[in-house]
Image (tube, rainbow, N blue to C red):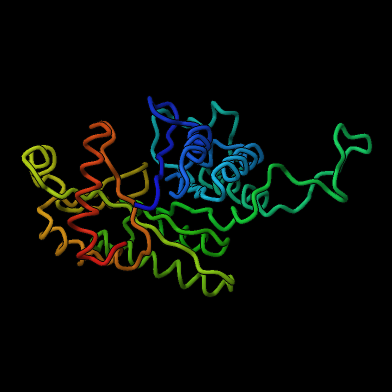
Length: 299
């Protein structure tokens, strides 16, 4: 298991500001990646966020993997307004989120932009000043959670890695994993056309449960989520939600081998039922690592 990625939602009884936790984990661990999936950029001050991200990345010795997005359905109506943000005239809240992300990316590049005080409190390096602390290499470890093919292409052009979740806009009527695989291919084509000189990463998220005992079967063995489902994430956007996988290990291996998006991606994020506690989640993850991953060639 190579890393831990955290959901971020506001106005919910859970973690909302991720960087204190990410920094604490970075101080207590040595090897795992520490990321988010995802930070809603409609709520974020990109300048303050760049400082927090730089500090957390330095504390973890370069293991931070920030996943960003334009946001998803939330607990309150237009919650970003309570944080003091609103879209420009003629723009949407999604436009605002993407604009905040673009500013954040530019700040992580480390170029100076602020005129220094001629009588500073501390000595300055020559030229315009950048935000500090700056962590070299963090810019290439930023991900974008894309819900559509077009935003995946946009992320590729800007040089962000791709996170594709368990839902996306229903753009063709095909099964979820086929649509998601097409999204990944569109992203990689756009990346190539953009001419970036490094190779990006692509992740997909899945709920996967190996049924090892009666407790597993009681929780997940009723087969209620073995197919994709359709719904609306807002008044105008029809979305397709990917299935969950729950079966005995041998059956799981056969099913997962046919998931085209998993085959296309290079990173798999397992969503876990954190309300069931630490011990049970250790069991869930250990079962996948021991009985499923080796047969599929995952490492």
